[in-house]
Image 1 (tube, helix red, strand yellow):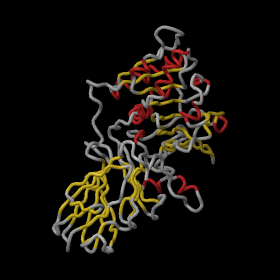
Image 2: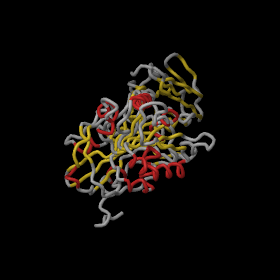
Image 3: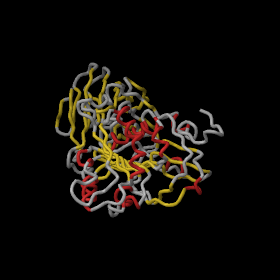
Image 4: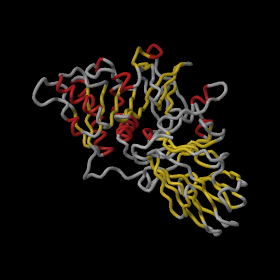
Length: 435
């Protein structure tokens, strides 16, 4: 990819951060990520504009979402009624919504429908939010959007670089370019994960972020120029964002694997994000999974931008945590192991880690659970002199399922000295406490 005077703005994942993407593994999970939505059960989306012109502009995007994704889309009428059938009634049956700038000025009936939708946990994608267009929802900027809109960034100059950071929303998006002047959003909430960033000179500005709120997921896309609604890559972003905000699989999404400096882990630990979540921190020095969090890929910018190299940032709650030193033991559960990490590779599209425990080969593959959610740890064990033990720890926030192991209290055993396999499946417990 080469920069030209005509196209100054690029999706620069390769151009500006090659040190990152040479070590990130983008792995296709055909058959794991899920097939496109069945035609018999179309995904219902409502597109809402602030005024009649906005609604008309959304027609192009509506057609693309119907054709490319097979969504069943409706447009909320621009005229807001004060009585009878409210104009935002299509929101009631929608599973997700796209708000172009915002819903605009609303009568009380429509405002009630909007509040009901926002608090329902349904998917919410906002394009170019403005405070004026959300006047019907008090506290929208801080509580929902997680940022405050301001003036034009860099006096309206077009972006010279646009970075797309790893996220399922960018599945199938190989580049993104626009000459649009961007609104600058400030005071980004601590739980808002920036997934797109624009640069002019030495200054940067967030161009897209996601939030996992208790009342539902939100994705905000700053680029809002109507011509983008005809851009296949932009259409793909919006469609993927709608699926992500509803917790649905994004077809073709890839896991990400990065060896980096993680919080509460030794340097050189692994950040692993599965296509539909969750994410895993595996510490090859301690010899196991340090924690699992209900979120997306890590924010590596603290590592790049600070002099001392701060740990990567994580977004989402940790629901599983281990602290036992080198919990895999050979022969007896209390015996200190001779543990060596021998590296990792890919097997069937997933990362496989190789350990040597008192001379016995152990291979661990980390992937999604059998239902597409959670984490499945699949172990292959080579021959060795004695049984293989694993010390488990109480997990108030997770449910653990075992196969191929014998359990003895908080210890489990692979009893055979011959080759074999066993699995440990981990799911977040509904209503479980965080460790």
